[in-house]
Amino acid sequence: MAESNFGDHEDVEQEQTEEKPYMCEECGYSTAKRTDFFRHMRTHTGEKPFKCDQCDYSANRKSHLDRHRVKHTGEKPYMCEKCSYWTADKSALSRHMRTHTGERPFKCDLCDYSAALKNTLDCHRVNHTGKQPFICGECGYGTAKKTDLSIHMRTHTGEKPYKCDQCDYAATRKFHLESHRRKHTGEKPYMCGKCGYRTGDKSDLSRHIRTHTGEKPYKCDMCDYSAAQKSNLDIHRVRHTGEKPYMCGECGYRTAHKYVLFKHMRTHTGEKPYKCDQCDFAVTRKSILEKHRLKHNHQVANPSCVGSVRTEQP
Image (cartoon, rainbow, N blue to C red; front, top):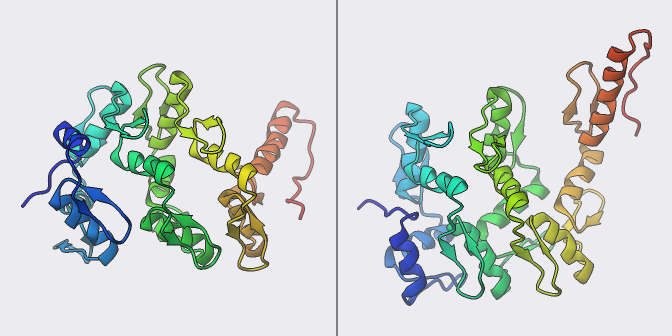
């Protein structure tokens, strides 16, 4: 039986008005629909009953398999009439249209928060429950979502399973790779309906739109602070807790911020991902590369000023 479209308003209204008798004993997830419950349980069991007949890919949802098959065909039949966005997934087009309409059909039943995507609402609800059943054995990091824990573990293992087929870039998350690929194509399918701002990154557009709306959906549960971005809220919360959940497995260095740990790890790996496109200079931090590029700009403006380009200082 074909799966229902999670973007339908009927599903949204049903979820918010009906009782939710089906509850997961593993994580507390509850739903009004039996089919949703069975699909959810696959996130715990790892069952992937939907198999691709052209490769060894398998999925826990039929809709995921349908999206995967497009990789074999390359077909993208669904087009946005507002901008040049194309997609192979009808539900993805429905979600995309909300970036133009501002529609937020998923509403929190405990506060006035609303979201354009169901998974965004699910993440928000954790702010009310505080449940974080999935714990990292390496550093104590806790999360409400099993998938978040799997992604977090890559900060310890260094695993980057998503690889670019045009360069040596690799990422821990699929959407990071998708955003990176647009650097090769120059594609910017996401456009702001207010000012025409375009970007190749969907989350970047969401953040940009808040500059128009002034929305700050991420709220501190210990004071009246609120933020437009979750990362800013995470940084703020450390002021209350003093917690430093991210730890380096090489030297024991601890930090409150995931991105700081990523930067720190480069002192061990020697990785220098930021490369100058005008010489062989490479560095661990983007800000250092930007300063370096000014030397090239200065030389163009002053041809008589010729000097050697220094490598990054340790």
